[in-house]
Amino acid sequence: MKTEEIIYTETIALNKAKRQLPLAVAEANRMLQTVTGIIGELDKEEKIKLLKKGRSLVMEKLKDKFLFPNATEQFNLQSLGVDLSGLNRIEYRKWSDFDLEVDENGKYIASERQPYFETFIHRVRTENQKKAVDIAQRMIELVSELQNSGLGGNFSLEKSAQIMPRLLRYNYDSKGQLELNIQEICMYIK
Image 1 (tube, rainbow, N blue to C red):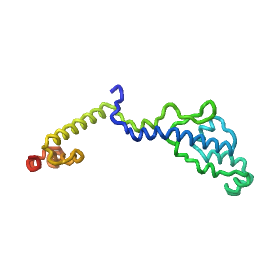
Image 2 (cartoon, rainbow, N blue to C red):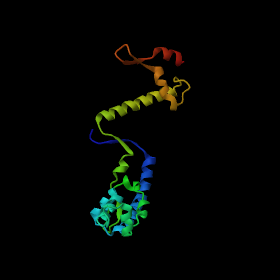
Image 3 (tube, rainbow, N blue to C red):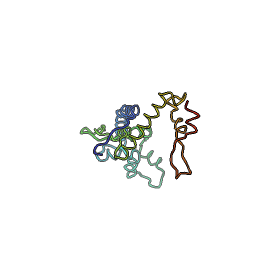
Image 4 (cartoon, one colour):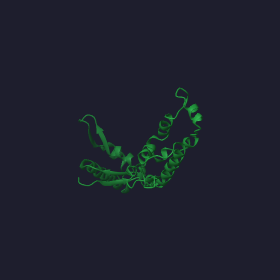
């Protein structure tokens, strides 16, 4: 199989993720502004690390300035006059699914490619997957045909999977093979 074939897209979830991306970028930039207010400017590499490490990166930078190494973190922060309450209100998970980068102005922007979006697009990647999808699709068409012909009884398509046990059964005696369920077919289908 040379190309991957899209078989299903979770459209609602994909569109929701696309709407969340600008909010994620805004929240990441809010965090950047808060952090630079606490520890000063960061270079591009540090800004990228900040996306993953968040508060722990800030604490790494601040620990070098702690005056009382044996005291609590809170005591040292107070002695430095540092208030992390603004940083504690940042919602890191808002951008954790997205790929962000730093632009020429030092702000976060969305990367052009977003692998997270791909999680909502399902593809067949091998010949065996393609064959399985084709077989399943034919089965759906056959069950729908049975339902539409009226031979499947009064089941809705939603419950059409219930028809299958009436048509087929697993035979434990003949090496575990599927076979027609003649008794049920004669009793059930009029």
